[in-house]
Image 1: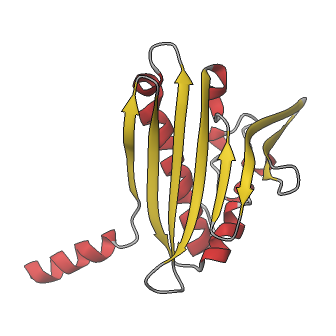
Image 2 (image 1 turned 60 degrees about the vertical axis):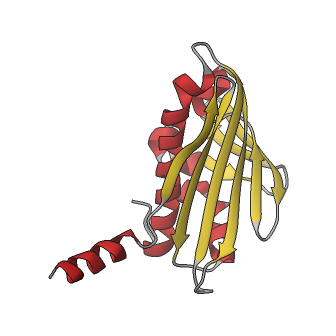
Length: 175
């Protein structure tokens, strides 16, 4: 019975996200999330480029994730607002194996912080799977200390979005 329970526990953790604040100092921090998704890398990349399908609306300024887009031509990870728009980040690299964005998400825009976010898509041991690694390096100034005030909350929000992306790709619904 113990062997069966151990096997069930191990299977339930298979594909689970590994998340952590990897490094932090008063000047900044790095958040990293690694998850295995039951889909090939190109499918994961395409879904990542459509945040309106997986981003949580409660972490948008308009209150509606359907207003979020990543435009490959302009590089804008933008949100349409009632009276304008918000540029959350700028896409600075889009290749088969990675997307890289620059900028400060959400309330970090009210600080002297900036960041670099990378989505890396690597085929898993099973070629029908993808190991998605998302890192967000944030540096700069924030009253009270950038890492002290922001590392854990930002890591939590990024982790939630990565989990929603995985769920959307695997089930057709973000959560």
